[in-house]
Image (cartoon, rainbow, N blue to C red; front, side):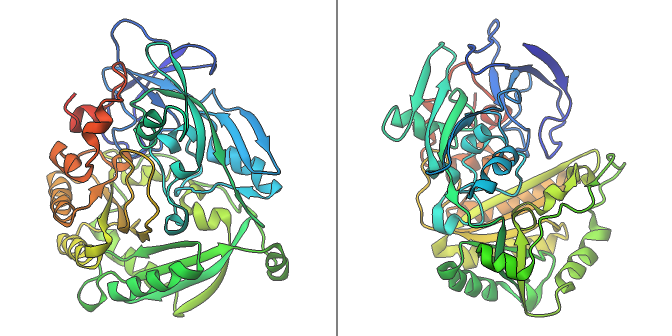
Length: 442
């Protein structure tokens, strides 16, 4: 087993704590446990906070477990090892007419990581979370057991592991149901809207005819323009439409942030003009678009190491969801609090979740509105702002996404996840994380 020390183990580069890693080389081997150490599965490190960190313990790296096991091109049923990335899956299945049923905003996450965080995408209002499309997986536990988990076999452990943040054991491989894809493109519209009322009207009308919806928000706009932004809605394009409009999947010039600047490039001096310019970049109210799947789903993946722009202190990604019954009032309160603070985010994503039930005990989505933002770590004022946002979310009956958190309190976590006590029973005694110790009291 190869071992190494890594400094920044999460994508947000916060907290910047050294991590000890032991890399697994075969899905057939047992867990490499020594002494009384705690362990935690580690995939591609695309979680933003400490749910993928185990300071004082050991990370079990899955990067070498990146093989396909079986793929039925007629049915779209795929079995693959834990460490295979969405990027590798797409490269193999999309030319054969299939795509991932659900994908978050990066394709550089692992299959097991997608299960452990029960990731969601721009089509949640139609198909729910990634966990809803898992047929089965094998879970390796610290007692040496190998358990096949599915909706019909070890169903309770299946539900605990989906969204279970890697705490129930080590997923060695999984079988998923892919979705048909007529092309590698999405056909739709980019719509400029002027405030939150216009957003909710678009979200409601678009959910009927569009599989994918999402919006970018200028979270520093105020007054009658509070919550203005661009609304994107799309469906997978037919091959005939792509041919007629000359769609191309060219990757373009490779971009990368080559080093970590001494200070964050996202700050009070740059945010307001950047947000205003980005909002104004589209002059027409509605623009017809044909996106490649990379352009629509993974725009940030085009810039390698984009997380470095936040400087040596890193950044905190904050994602919350508030229930549908109070989503308008809660969203207004959240945006107003952010605008007043002056600590806006350039990467502000806002959309609505649908009513499809998430399968995991700790799954994040609920029917309502979800907001995701990036804040450079700027000392106590950043944490104080996020505490105020937490208070709004908790009062509304919402919750914070664990995969993107590095600072919420145990009380906030408990308030948002009613099935926490039920989940605790399935935590493997040798598995732990910084997140678990911080919010679950271990």
